[in-house]
Length: 178
Ligand code: FES
Picture 1: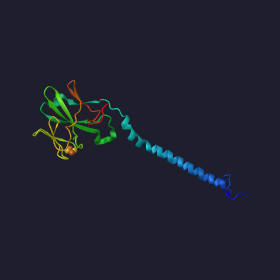
Picture 2: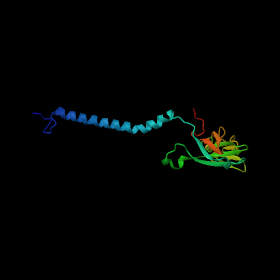
Picture 3: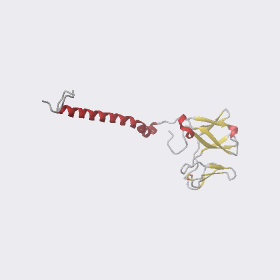
Picture 4: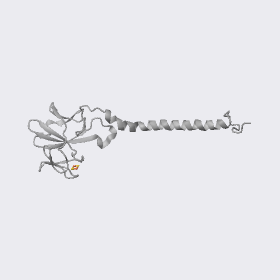
């Protein structure tokens, strides 16, 4: 008589119990493998996608040319191209715009070239100052003193139909742009 299987209907003996355990183990392992694969997709994407991402020029209108008069430096705020509605405050960025004679401009990233703190413009001293470690920049964005290794990063800009546009598709920095 078969001692390993007492009317369970599996049709097997002691080997049938082993077989069921084995099947359950394989099924569990298979489900875990599928679950792990599904869960790893976003992580893999986050690690690999930046290597494949191509940044195109995204010209963004930041106002009328007259909003940035010669001799003044003003803050321009804009929505980051491609930002998601769920990004909240992080979907907005800002740039310092220096107006010069003849509809010429310099558009600086607000982030310090040292460790990225937002710099502030002081009209009276005509200097940008960083509150984090005391970095200072002249009005043309060049480094004046402190830890920053270079001047402020600048955006590409152009004027079209009396409007000032900046290439906001790529935040200024030392990264590859091509
Ligand atoms: Fe500006 Fe360090 S982040 S000086």
